[in-house]
Length: 86
Image (cartoon, rainbow, N blue to C red; front, side, top):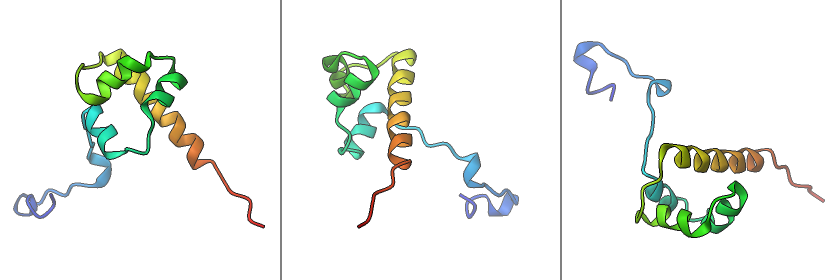
């Protein structure tokens, strides 16, 4: 992006960028995430989440936020792990 805006002398930094993708694209990319497990963790019907994941239905803003918070919580838990080395 900086190359594109070079003539205008505009510099874009990483903190100015925001990546937004659709829910089903997220689950296609991160296949390691189990939608049924996530649904159970966030108290959502697994069939409904599966429909969101496949792109059959679009979640409301409230449902999207609930899913995102669940994913972020799992990510935080994973980032806090440390394995014992013998």
